Image 1 (cartoon, rainbow, N blue to C red):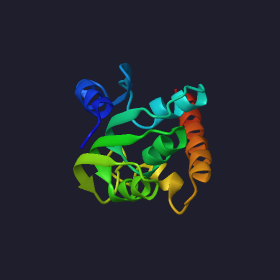
Image 2 (cartoon, helix red, strand yellow; image 1 turned 30 degrees about the vertical axis):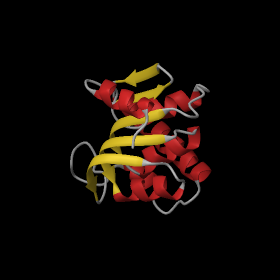
Image 3 (tube, rainbow, N blue to C red; image 1 turned 90 degrees about the vertical axis):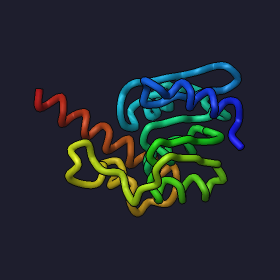
Length: 145
C-alpha cells in the first residue's frame, strides 16, 4: 500500500520529471537526470520523510534518495540496481517498468551517472562520485559553448 504522500507525488508527476511530497508540501522539477535531487541536497533542503515520484531511477538516483532520507519511491522506469539499492536500505519502491540498466540520453551507452557509481557500495562514496561526474559534465558543457 502506498502512502498519501506517494500518491500525491505520483499525481503531480504528470508534466514533471520529479515530484517530492510530504504532508501537503510538494516540490516539483522539470529537469532531467539527477540534477534536481543533487541541487536540493547541496542547498541543504531537508527532505527526510518525503515521498518521491521520478521518471527514471537507477542506482545513482536511488543513492541520492537514500542520502536525503526519502521514505518511499515510485519510478516510471526503475533499474534492477536501483531497486536492489532501495531494497537494501528498506525503502519501499513501486514502478511501471523494471529494466536491466539506465541508458544515456543518446541511447548509445550506460548513463554516465550509473557508470560513476558502478562498483561503489556505500552511499557517501556514491554521493561523492555523483558530484564529481556532475561537475565534470557541467564543465564539459560550459567549455563547449
